[in-house]
Length: 249
Image: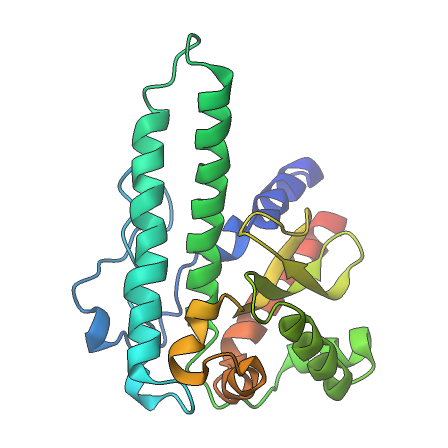
């Protein structure tokens, strides 16, 4: 494998697929609430046939995030994005050289939005279900990039709160461009760093917290951090770091 091949593989991850190909953590148990969902394979999903992944934790066990909130979020918002993606992909399959440009542009914009929504939701759910205690190599990387976990926590929360009452995501990324960790603001499912792998994903759309907290987004952030599965975040970090090292070899 040459450098170009490795960098090409990393570039896929910049759009979110890099981390999503492994799907939800196989070390965690799916919830009974999503027992009807089936898990798509890691590669080769035919257009229009995406299916929802089950929750990788028991939603009854989260602290400060109700089962009703989590199940509604999973079954309506995440699964809804997949249903819409399937419909868009079916319509894209009928595009020809004679299809008006504005039709193609609209479909491709929706394809990107629903694809990123599905990926980010899967990453979001997969980094929940833990005890909220950071550990491992990623904790050291956070200290190196931000001067300490406390400073990272402050900046991540501030970015999340900047989206409260609106729509968007807060993402801790491994930047392949700068070879360190960065926090990014992302809106409308379609904004992401061009060359990074998402490590920790926070959904700041109101559907992620309004059932439990109304407009009190700060309380939702407290609950989110109390449930972060840092083992999963660390796994994503180690995978991204190995890819970066391979690219430099």
